[in-house]
Length: 72
Image (cartoon, rainbow, N blue to C red; front, side, top):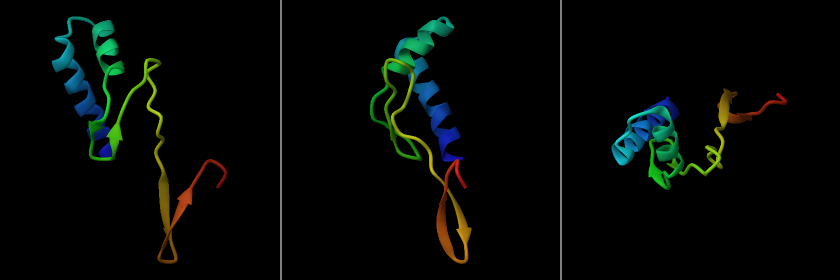
């Protein structure tokens, strides 16, 4: 849930930074965000709209956290 919380914070920051009037303004403002201190991690968005990190999901199995990936 921290990632969703961070997404709302990123949009709020972009709106405040750009004083947006339309969607393209918001998109450009999001692309300028660097080192946003989010609940999940520090977040930066590049000029293509991507964030270089990806989320990890774990399962608790037999008392240990096991990384879940697309192959499991």
